[in-house]
Amino acid sequence: MSVTHLLRIQKNQQNIIIQLIVHFQYARTNFSSNVLTLQQGAVNNNIETSNSICEKVQILCRQGLLKEALDVLHVTDQKHLRLSTCTYTSLLQECLNKKSWADAKRVHAHISQTRFGTDLNLGNKLVVLYAQLGSVQDARHVLDKMQVKNVASWTSLIQAYSKHGNDGEALSMFCEMQGNGIQPDHFTFASVLPVCANLKAIEEGKQMHGHIIRRGFQSEVFVGSALVDMYAKCGCIEIARQVFDKMPQRNVVSWTAMVSGYTQIGDMGKAMEFFQKMPEKNVYSWSVMVTGYAHAGCIEDALELFQKMPNRNVVSWNAIIAGYAQSGKFDEALKLFREMQLRNVRANLVTFASVLPACANLAALCKGMEIHGSVVRSRLPFDVFVWNTLIDMYAKCGSIKHAWQLFDKMTMRNVVSWTAMIVGYAMHGFGKEALQIFQEMQHSGTKPNKITFVGVLCACCHAGLVDDGWKYFKCMTQDYNLIPSIEHYCCIVDLLGRAGHLVEAQDFINNMPIEPNAAIWGSLLGACRTHSNIELGEHVAKHLFELDPENDAHYVQLSNIYAEAAKWDGVASVRRLMKDRRVKKTPGCSSIEINNKVHAFVT
Image (tube, rainbow, N blue to C red; front, top):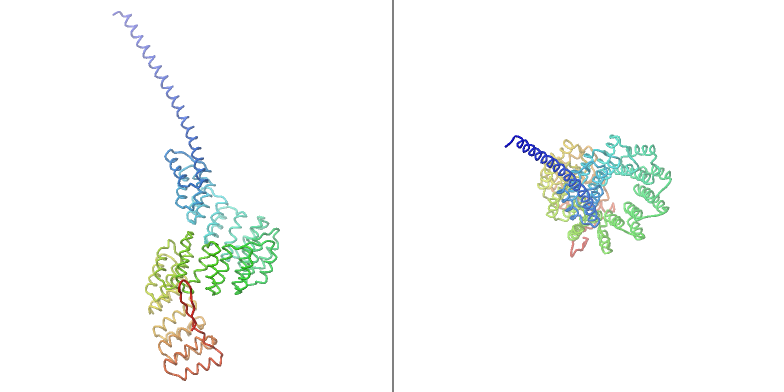
């Protein structure tokens, strides 16, 4: 083969290689171009898919289909799609509508994983959502995690603490907000002034009044109304009147605040004067007057006003029921509750908290259990106050087992819950069980109050635990800085008296740092009867006849001491004394519940 031929073949091979290289380069370029085209198409498809999913989720939320909307949310996780702020807002609103804390947490977690985790508006909505679902701790956690906060963020949490009765924290949040350089607005002041009113924090309220004037918010009608209400509830009715008179514009809230202020100090004349001058009245205005008359002991006037109301709702019914219950007219309170049910007015937590004590005082267990059933069927949110009232009702009606079952089921307990259970065990003679509950209370970190110690000391009395009684009496001051009141001293006298330590009880009374009252001496007189100590009984009775000369129980007690010792001359002398002083023996009264009705017997 010639050299020329070989050169021609080599050249052809080079051309083929060059062609292949060119073709490969073109193909790679074309492939890249196609890939870019595909990627751009995928992005466009993702945007379209995201928009479509957002629209779908919002439609489902508007239809109330939260579960289905959350199922769609799960699809976005798998496809790594993003939702809009409006979509998250719709989901959060539907969680609130359904009162679903668990679903709210799920949506919250989804928000935190996206670029919206730092969104101010969504952060504020989460604070409001958790607050309205009753989870103030979650609301606080959201606020603490927010990188950017505004006045709405802080105000929402202040409102949350106030709504759930934690006024101390609400006031602390207000101070913390100012410490962070955030200036309160008129909504903030309208939210924090009721906190000052509840805490009777008049000095803090006056400082806020100064801020309001400097910021020019005093002309806002709801701020002015909150100021009037704050001063009235703090007992400064004259300042409240001055603020009211200077308001350029007033509404029904302003007028009602003044009416309420006068009812709180018992000036029903002034309250009625303002009430009659009101340009317009609402159900709450009428209810304030009804409550005012009831608290003043004018229950008939309260009922007359209630019957004149043009419209009634659960608030007005609660006012009259609570009025009768607090006036000791428990039968009438239960009858009004029954009438309220017959009129198809739906009871709320306040209704149950008002009517259950009536059952407790009448020992109407069946009626109390019936109302307990109404509480369950109402499906109202858990309320520790109502549960405490139920525990107290069962204990006072003699069903300590039911009281314990309720207490054991409580998801949240406060000092009243523990105290109700301790007092319940104590009043039924279960002293050791009461002290065990008290020890559990201490371990739980709940700080006991004075009423708790009354229950603890009563438990020691019933169990005959003199040494433990002394220990807990001293524990009040040493461990909890609580100053004993007359009730605690009375418990110690009863403790010593039951144990037969009458001389020690007398010495204790003589050395009390406060003046002993009739209850103290009456407790010792009862012990004198139990242990047949006539001499000391006569001495104690003299104190009682001076302190409480019209109380027939003391005369009867001394007469019984004489009778049990067969000292009939003493019995006759007591009867003559009663006759001379025109003291008559009060008839005894007992009651029994038959067929859901309470029957009273006088003897």
